Amino acid sequence: MRLAGKVAIVTGGGSGIGRGIVLAMAREGADIAIPDIQVLNAEKVAGEVKALGRKVVAMKADVTSSADVKAMVDRTREALGRIDVLVNNAGMASPPGMPFTNNTEEDWDRTFAVNTKSVFLTCKAIAPQFIERKAGRIINIASIAGPISALTMPPYSVAKMGVITLTRIIAKELAPHGITVNAICPGVLWTDFWQKLAAHIAETNPAFKGMTPRQVFDKRVSDIIPMKREQTPEDIGAAAVFLASDEARNITGQALNVDGGVVMQ
Image (cartoon, rainbow, N blue to C red; front, side, top):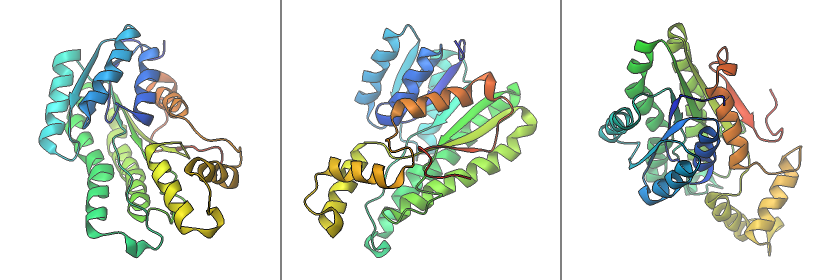
């Protein structure tokens, strides 16, 4: 198993992509901490991790709060003994733009706090421990919405591009200490956000009039993804396992697009 003996924190690990990462890492031998604002979701996924024979701790945490982040790190060390991998997965989508003036100041503030500020807070909290040990893996979940400048959700697109830039900055600083820092940019996944966005598109775009949210989603997959298939939490989990493993020891400062070919660079 590629992560045997490792301990990983996966923020927002109680659902969606986070759950996919948690289970993928547990199957590869990692013990897991699951901080989530929805603690009942975290506890449910913790039960799945226990069924795989791994140690796990679930906790409520608001990753926009430095106090909560410190408590998250402390509790993980107390329960599981150490931290080897940090996955910054917690995030939120902004309300749709189209036009961008539809978004409010509050949309921008909240979206940046949850998606970008949180990455700074968690990395700041855990970096001293990684530096002391001369080892560690940080994996930040960004989005292709950043590189493609998605019109549908301006605050989210800008916030996730910020995650990519912050990933590169921290990677440069921590590289001399043997610590890798990378981002994963998921493509198009059938999530709660996409259900809401697809419904909005069907209501506002004449080209999608009369379609169900799932029909809108499937058309978007067909239109924009060269491989003509949606991505899944399991796809992102597999990428995260790779970046957390020794196989990726010489990979840092990268943004890995898991998107069926939408972004090619």
